[in-house]
Figure 1 (tube, rainbow, N blue to C red):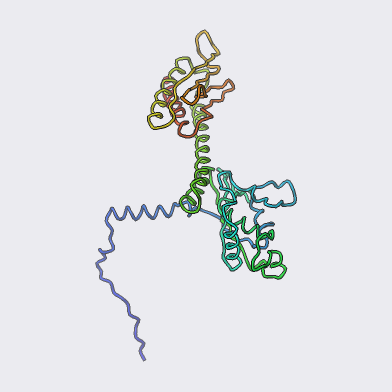
Figure 2: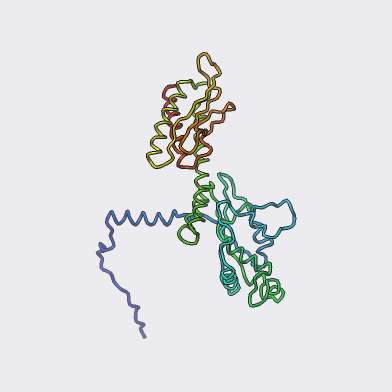
Length: 335
């Protein structure tokens, strides 16, 4: 008996209905790239740790903590929390109890660990807890016997073989970042307007700002050095030109709503005082309604160039911008 062929829907040959306009194609490409290059799709390693071994070798084999002592201390994993991370007391007792109950009933939870490796190689045993601190805290209290499940402690459940090496586990995602700035931004993106309070996120943003300021100041010093500039090439007129640039940037910064500052004083010394050439050291200070004298830009005698170490990111900007413009101007003068 001949079997009937399965029904196949035949589409018309004209597939113009599938064609997208140039605008639609660009939108499609943009949206796909948003997903493709998202931080959440960056390369990572995934490992599984048995719950029974979590607070022994399981977790600590990955963490960056003081390994000089053989025994692991209670709450040792709190050493492996980055400075921008919120504290581990955000969950109530009931939230911790409910989470432990869910884990015991089969919930698989994922903890994110991260490491800043720069241009180097990743190293197991050098990770920090980026996400999952509240969950680890709840599980650790269960491990210590401070939280019970169905009236039994963690140890009792192990002795009863309710918890075994095969019964429950925790997943770790291990992320490697090139810079700490990348790491903090990942943390903010993952938690802002979702699980963390405004104060928690503010703390992370303040830490991020301090990192960005340190990075930019170091880049300014390196630019000065890498372009072949040194103190021997700096004259009195050069310093006055730097002050001119700084006055312009301070004025613009105040217009932008930042702290209003003015040049307070210039102290300068030369290797060749008679010709006022060959800078020995210089200190440009600023003042405002809130302080009388603070560091603006300083050329230390040991070669270190300092930038308003007291200032936050917004108030730091005019000094770095003025310095950068001054370097470019100085190079043109040398040419």
